[in-house]
Structure formats: C-alpha cells, structure tokens
Image 1: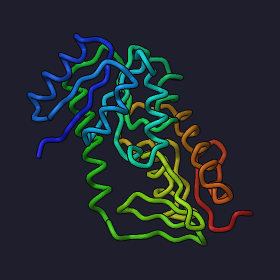
Image 2 (image 1 turned 90 degrees about the vertical axis):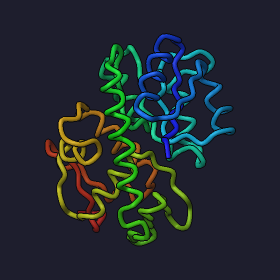
Image 3 (image 1 turned 180 degrees about the vertical axis):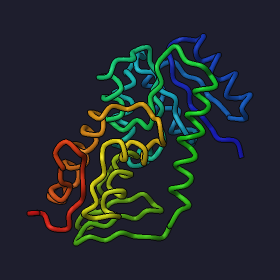
Image 4 (image 1 turned 135 degrees about the vertical axis):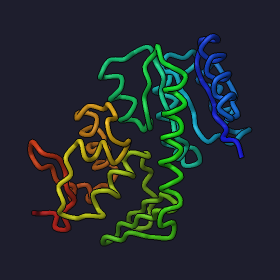
Length: 232
C-alpha cells in the first residue's frame, strides 16, 4: 500500500516539485499552503508522514509541529521540517520540539525521498521489533510496540526522538553513550546534527519524566547514561 505524505509549504513551485517527485517514487501526496489547514486535513485523512515548511501563513511550522506532538492522536506522525533557514538554532529548535528530520532549501528531491524512506524505515523497524515488550523500572513503564510511556499509570507524551533516547539509555543502565552514539542510534551514521541538539532533547526528556529524569546522568565532556540509583 502506498504511503500517504502531507506536504505543507507556502510556495506553489516547491509543492509541485515535491508532489511530482514523490508520486514518481510511488507515494500518495496532498499539498496545502497554510499551517492551520494541517489540523483540518488530519481530521479527514490519515498520513504516514508530514513534510512541513517553517515559514507558513496562518501558523508557522514550529507551532504546527509543537501542537501536533502534544496531541496524542497525532504525536506519532513523523515530521520532516523543510526551510530556507539553515542556521544551527533553527535545526536545534525543530528537533527540540519533536521533528524527526530537517532539510534546508535548496534541496534535491532525491535527498528528500531518501530522508523520507529513512524515517519510515526506522519507524517500521521500531513498530515490528519486540512489539509486545514492556520495559519496567519502578513505576515507569515503556511499551515498545505502542511507543507508550507511563509513570504511575499516567501517560507521558514523548516525541519520537525522546522515546528513542529513553529506550536506548534504559536498555543498558550504567552504559555511557556519547552524543555521537545517540545521534547514530536516532538517525544513522553520518547524520548531520549538532551535539547541542542532543542536549536539548535530554533537557526535554528529563522534564517530561518528572523525578525519573534524575536517573539520566550527564557524564561531563562525554555524554549520558541511565543509572538505577538516582544518587550515583
């Protein structure tokens, strides 16, 4: 079955370029030019991935992404942000709020397709791998198949990257993961993301995990690890 991609950009030429090339690559596409329309469209149709521009009328891409990731029904939809802004702070901001990837304009359609395939492949692997497994630590429960995190029976909504980091760390307690190791686990080798973006992800994850965030320890000048003893 063809994957369904929602393309959101205020430039018609970009929409036409992306939809044409994605449909050649056997994807189904829908193009819209306004940030507010994203929510209306998602009420009508299920999408496997969203290509989302930063600069949009109605509501900018950062706000759209933030709202989608906070809503349970849409938080698991992968988002690749596309923008003419290629500065580090924009990349960090997009990843911090839950985007799964980031591509700067101008871009090659082949690169966009490759990134889409990589994101969908990671998602499929995580859905099929150990679908019924639940990781339990005190009153923290992580259901891998449902990508669900609970603390004291209360659902904790994590972004795709936050969930990946948490499961990476908690599966090997005490093991120190460098920032590059975390980046590779999230996105694959040679993925261009700054160390600072990993730090932002950790900050957000710690806040969401409440007191369990204290078990994620910083190893100065190296990276992070999950310790079973909060005081260690």
